[in-house]
Length: 544
Image (cartoon, rainbow, N blue to C red; front, side, top):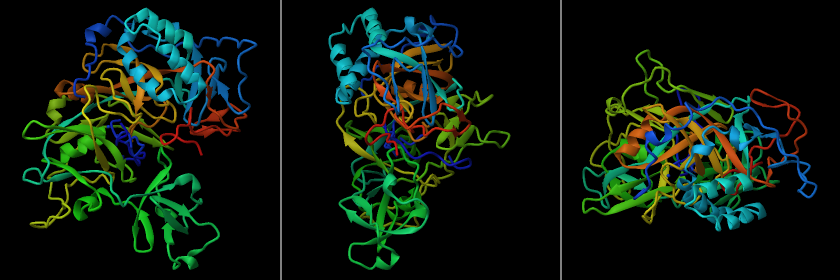
């Protein structure tokens, strides 16, 4: 789900605003399961290899046939290119036999999720239409038939980060459930907001560089900068002043969230402003009894609200306020943050927590462990403003300092999982959230990691169907565990080293850019204009 907010700022300042926030989210979005299937028991996976294997030896790519399409001058073709790069990642062709656990996986478990993706991918070009048409004729109950289909239709590439390191971090998320009410009635005093009607959007790619002030018009809900005008023209009817220095540009969908105040266009309200001033232009979907539980639902990017009469409201990510995700990280005994986070450029390197083996239950009273982060709960949740109601006393807000905020939409309750950022229901155990710049949504991704708690190998084919604000970087995946207490426990425990392999339809054009060299150094390319995205996607991941 697009829970999903812009990249966090460096500590102490930066989940995962919605995988599940997806994920919005705030692509995002991205920044999102009634009877969702649960992941296979660890015992099933223990038959696999001893552990996530080290980087496999690269297998030479097959030579293209004379009739095969030639790579475009500015890009690569899957199945022909042995290796290629984007700003975030390097992709190296390998044989399927080099992928650890490939022959042992039960592909019938991931097949429904793949067919779900095909409903969207069918319209993404000839290569995908051909693949999905042939998928419809595969025996979905035959593991061998499904495996043969993937091996015949796809080429597999190992994903490495921009330093060519194969190892990354795999975390987990779930669909939380909160007690709530349709109406304001203590203790249900914290509003769950829908998307605000006064939120405006500007395309980052069309904004002038720099930090000056420009004139802009509002066309519907879009903000358009007016060229040839200066600040002297701001008094003209319909013109507003937009201060570019206040803009957060690093968003997956290349959109800035704004609001009007007088003759100025300002960044949309922060969490503190929403809690202490209210959001009168946003519909209240429900009220819940815990600000911390609502915050976790925002981080997950979706959730369920159970009413007193048993009715269940399912909500999914709708939008986010465009503010950076900056949670308060819980401190370890030595005074350092429990979650080791490193921000480098537009990537978030979530490092493994050395020696952090605390039991999940022992952390629940004063921390929130979610999507690989251990966050400190606010000391006390104060009152917040509710539109249309007079405050009985001072309004201090929830005490949550994170300026980012996720807005939800009410969705039907299908028998499957919540709807992710790709627009299809997530499947517990087989759907993951990814950074869509390096791993396009809808694509099959083989994950090699370990089961939380037991450490048994977890090696299986998953489908990238969600995003998350803290899911930023090349070798980064967030594993969807479903709903219920067991799913919550597994998701909170999940923070393991992992490796990723993406399956690309043969003949698919990828990494299109005016690339002239594969030479690169830490943090960026040298002598090449590398693309930002492996495959640009409208509204989720778009190249400049």
